[in-house]
Length: 360
Image 1 (cartoon, helix red, strand yellow):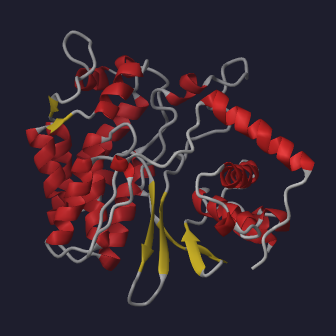
Image 2 (image 1 turned 120 degrees about the vertical axis):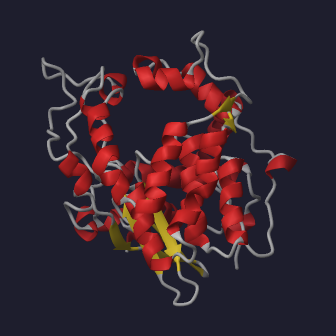
């Protein structure tokens, strides 16, 4: 393996400019602090945005559940403790590796637009675009949620423990309360729109209008009731019946920017099982979600560009290595914004040869 030639003068000048940018923005290339060092496990591991959610998944594994069982339990707790980022009202993707067969399956639970959605729904009366907050706050921007139907599909095919058992940790925490995390407190405190939604305001703020404090115990008995129904009746308890009626009413009667969702939108939602997007990278096969997710194809594009470089010669976190990753990421994300959503145009048609991973 030969060492590459020294970079030309122009490249050295670019690196110097990049170094000045790093210094100006305060970007640190030092090793991660001890608290963020790599973790190791002998048998299984769960990673989640909140330790309560990770613990729920770990407990399920300890009881004999598998990765799909743990994912369901973890997601249900996230719906409670990380409502700003994850919940039953959103969508999700799930990549599943079957160690027995070697298959990699991609479960698509992406939200879909209501049937009544129109191209002009994010335009003002004078046909000018709404600002982000004009469009995003209220019911108009809400898509038909898919994460619950997707998890049920995956569990029916791969789960080991009973569906109802996976909801017990979230139900317990919703009834007994959980400690508000620093992240949740910070996001509530800086959000300027939550108070325009009466129920959200009553839940996330105290009687004095102050955001829930870090460590304050916050219970959600209404969510616990919904989770109990889903645990006993399956996802149909969410997509039909009383819960579906409440969802549609909340969206279509929102005090700000009401939406256009119907009961048929919820009833007709179906998750999809897709082929995972995979390509070789050096000695590995790397797989990711296919479209409509942009994550898998963008990551593979980045790796395809980096594969031509001998990264082993560069120290992790060094200026040169960060520059290469940053430039590959910039090009991949530039291609991402031009991509056509899967489901309307086939992936091979949507991407030119130049845009495909590795140019293949």
